[in-house]
Image 1 (spheres, one colour):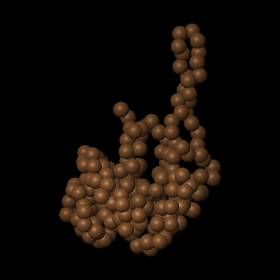
Image 2: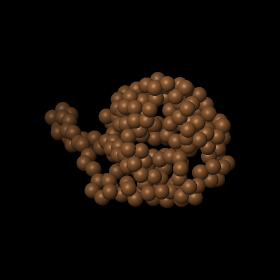
Image 3: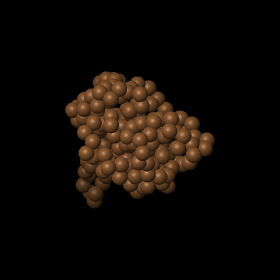
Image 4: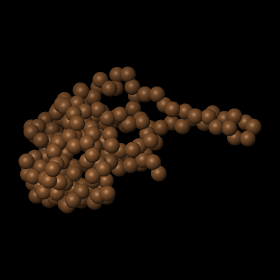
Length: 199
């Protein structure tokens, strides 16, 4: 990936001061829902590329490789759900992603749990259908692929981060990723992107 540089004059001496911005690749399982959400972050202090694959957790790493053929990235984040993926396949996918040094960002049962945490803490095990039903009680007209979810929820983002961290603390002794429900670590990617927002 190309890096942008700039030149400044200091007195009579010209100096080459190169501003190197971090490059971040985000590859999402969902073709639109997650992609639209992360693309809405205004991060002028980083080069961010967001791609939606429409492929499951167990093949997401292979799907991401096409973006790594021609470009180099400082950070690689793969975003996916437990959803209908078999427990062992889900666990294997996370282990494989992390063994490559990439960031595995996953939600159980689904990405919408992250949205739901903007409104309230969730403790009871949830199916995807139950999660969507709860979210629609908060956002009656919610449908997948809404383009302005980030704008709708950004004033509650600190609540979501707090709730997600609380879930993580509660589930820390569960060794199987697939058994952590409800659970999402989307907050880690959100916190990273917020580092590069316009101050």
